[in-house]
Length: 214
Image (tube, rainbow, N blue to C red; front, side):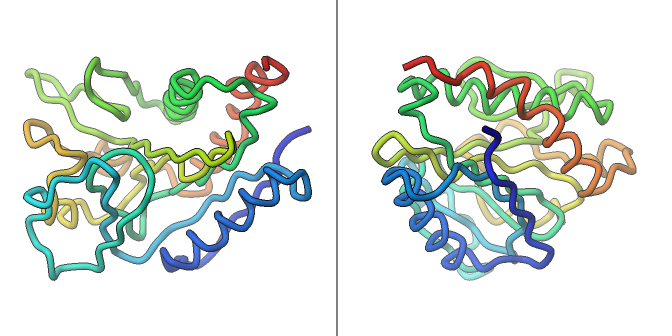
């Protein structure tokens, strides 16, 4: 059975999103709620993952900063960035966190491909990257995952048309040698709705393969 899909039309405050996810994850774990993929945007904010280095928060007073139990370091969220919170029961899909993260990466890659973007993995760097030529590589998709009782939450973020200047308040994911890009920055006119359709289209291809492995 496909997960429930929820799309929020207005930006969602981070504490509200976290509260909703925790309740839903508890329900999935108890068998009282179905899996869910939640597509949303946040108001401008920074989040700190479990590996965040305080020195990577370059402008502490710029936007609210939220500590979160997901993996990773500092990330920016804001309008124009599609966040997908993925709440799946890995008890049914296979208790393999490495494989799950690889599936999230492939989901981003496949979705971007439908929009004409070649997203790529890079060894030792979490997320999805776009080669810009001349050795330049920019990040277009971020991944941060938490698992409770083998139910996943948090998820991915893809830059459609955010204010890229907002990323300068942090060292994104602890990586200072490379930049950040978006669909708009790459010269594409794809909208949030276009990306949502791509995510819905590619999700079954990637995640149906993870069913009934355990």
